Length: 176
Image 1 (spheres, one colour):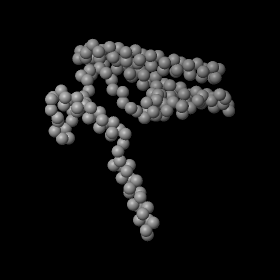
Image 2 (cartoon, one colour):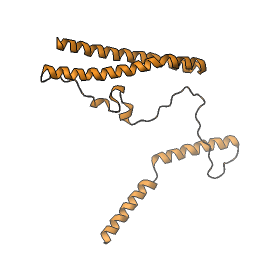
Image 3 (tube, one colour):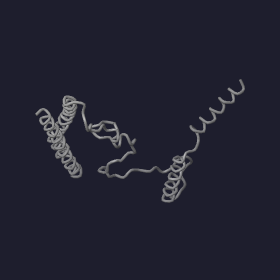
Image 4 (cartoon, one colour):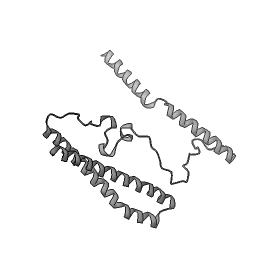
């Protein structure tokens, strides 16, 4: 009974340290907060009330995009592979058991490539409406960002079209 009680108390103590223990991030945030509070109070000429500190604020520039920290599996995701990381991308087999198996493989790849082409085409079809919307209500910076994105959409559509054409050529050659 006593060993179980001691083990339980030990587990609770470790859990409390993990939950309530000081972390490096909290110490760094506290140092940053103290530095900001000190500079704000020096400018104001008086010390802030207990528990009240100056807050960090974001700049007024709305054109800068936020770059959040992401899980590497999400950050490295490719549109064609969804959430899967790039290293686990299935490779093209170098040999097939039969010609029919190879044709079946490339037909599946053609289905995937066609679905991606349709997605890219829908994105291309949305561009005129979005461009009109930005020209009417947007700022010059938003228009410049849109022009850059428009070029990316066009490049993606061209790559998807090239991929479908490449697979269709392989299938025509295999079928003879």
